[in-house]
Every structure is written in structure tokens, then in C-alpha cells.
Length: 59
Image (cartoon, rainbow, N blue to C red):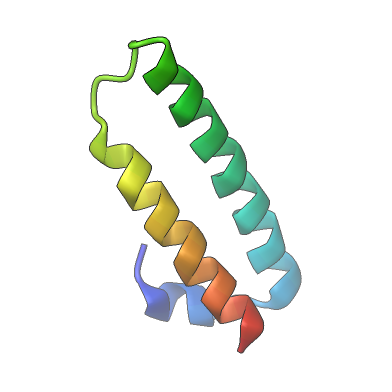
């Protein structure tokens, strides 16, 4: 997800996206702990998306 795409959204939509990504991160961490996660790069990508969304909310 690119930051330019995030900037075009309004705050309620960004908050909803943030909640969805946080839930996704929790599921990925659970899969990692159970050793069922195949692509571990998804963790980093999801964390970066959360950071981008949080930055857009603060601006």
C-alpha cells in the first residue's frame, strides 16, 4: 500500500483500515507462533502499513 493512496482517504476510513491491519497482524503473529506461517515477510509489510496509516491519521 502506498502512502499516496492512504492520503486520499478520510479519518474514519483510515481508522477502520488501522483496526483491520492490527487484527491481521495479530493473526499473523499467532500463525508464526504455531509455525504455520509460510511467508514471514507479511509481518513486516503489515507493520509498515500500520505505520503509514498512523502517520496519515496524525497529519
